[in-house]
Amino acid sequence: MKMERHYFHYGDHIIDFAVTRRKRATLEIAVEPDTSVVITAPLTASLDDITQKVRRRAAWIRRQQRFFAQFAPRTPHRFFVAGETHLYLGRQYRLKVIPDARRTVKLIRGFIVVLSDHPDQPEVTRHLLNRWYRDRAYIKFAERLEINLERFPNSEAFRPHGLIVRQLRQRWGSMSPLRGLVLNRRLIEAPVDAIDYVITHELCHIAEPRHSSTFYGLLDRILPDWRRRKERLEKVMA
Image (tube, rainbow, N blue to C red; front, side):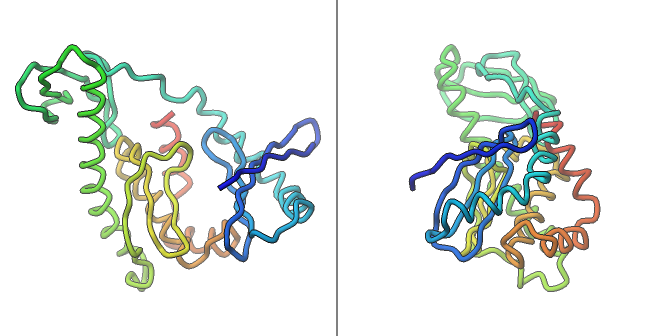
């Protein structure tokens, strides 16, 4: 779907924002971890109407951008070679690559051990490690979903219709209008309390799709320390 790009001046700053149009009744404003501003708007919304609504949220947008900016630079590029450190559930593990006819990954006493028939090829190591992360993500996220559903008085009313693990470029997660929960594969690298924050945040969107006062009121009741968890997520994953 085509993405439009626009901007406006806010004091001494220029706020750039990207607009994606979908079949929906309301407009959503999101500030991503890279400080970019993404607007999801109804198909019939005019640019003037969109810009006006974004201007009204300009102070909030700048606060969110400053919050994310404090954690820059983000995680450096990985080369997938022995001795490199990688995160799993918030802990640093050193990568060990061992020649072996099998292709598998194991967690052994502070090491992520990759058994590979091509130990000298980082691309093969990357593929094996990413597959392991994805498999672990489906297991751990499903487990944490059940635990976090228990936070809600009527848990079944907040149960998503499906769980998808995907490599997302910007967001940690999303909840589709059809109640499909999508979680960023990278979340498996984050601490469990941070994973719980993202899951609970997205479950709250089942009751309130927008980041409105109603949404944050619900999130405050269900997970009172969500701000601390969010900050830890950004610090660990920076």
